[in-house]
Image (cartoon, rainbow over all chains, first blue to last red; front, side, top):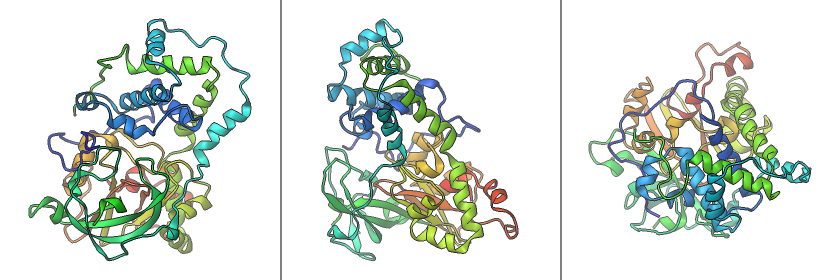
Length: 214
Length: 197
């Protein structure tokens, strides 16, 4: 979807806020959110991936939330959409917070090891040369003008621009969740072709699925 | 920056309260254990971070054959040092030279090579960095104290699909003869994102 998350090129956000020696998680709940995202995904408790859920947040809330607040919303909506939890029972638990009853200390240790293993052993890899590719290195390609409603990875700022294929990183299922792999391309654009004659000199490289290109 | 700590307008409580409630409900039902969540958090707080990438860079600086393998197939070369996994399934390493400088951004969200750099810092995920790095990279680099002269070719990489990128910085002039450990100590996260040259 073409949402407010698609920020490339926008004005008005000011200087980049840099914090020296920042911790990985600023507050414990941020770490819990991250851990729950990984664990519920690996255990199949959540529908969809994290990013469509983040992009579905209304623009005002998206802009007014911190990064992990947006993640927390997406984790929750994924759990609710999958039928694992209901919003009502989460609301009720927020009203009457208490630690878990019957803490499952006897949970199968294999489950724990499978979940943590998911962090370091995800069997995902590009499909490689067996995926048909319409374009080749050095081909000139143009990014289609379009307004796709579903999850995609084609930012607005490159649409309509013409660039050059520099590499074929292989075939991957499209980000929307399609199962069959589709060719991806690393495409190089001249900054002047994206931002006009006042652009800083240089190049922009971005990986794009074949469906975005013509 | 307008990224204040807000609350959900349409649901009860803060994110912190809701996440706590969600974890309690899932644990109570035996769907996950808090130990697993603890292990994931500790892994990214303790074991996975830019010190991993720094080891990769230092090895590339002292071992030309490793450097060549790293540039040819980043995923496999970092795997030689034991690094891999989520958000590192297809790693491409970008070589800085005297004439070329590379810098990485994710305009749509926060794509980042976790196995070698850990989780991204706040500024990498900030609206300002995402919006500006693709349009005015030299201006943003200047905010990091980095000047890239006009005769250096600037390459900005917007991580958008499945490849994750890490920059191989220029070796220091006096790298010859220094130990790999010592060199690793000179490599920072910001070098490997490319906001420092």
